[in-house]
Length: 91
Image (cartoon, rainbow, N blue to C red; front, side):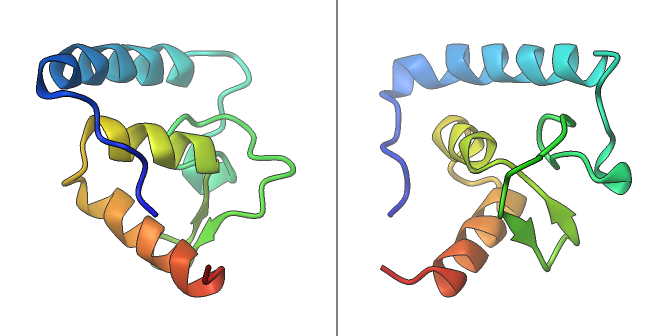
């Protein structure tokens, strides 16, 4: 099930804060680019995460995917990752 969508007035602010958080996260000394095994969304170590996208050939945090889907439900990458996770873990 997709995460609950934010009210329209909150989406823009949340999206701006999410982008700022991701930009800040990418500049951290422990950041790992996705090609180095880091999370697709926040670039941090996805240690302990079982989430892997076959489409994008990358690990990601489930929490990061949920944040993206709340902020931007039309994000094509996130929608594909979500669909993959549902195929792997049917309810």
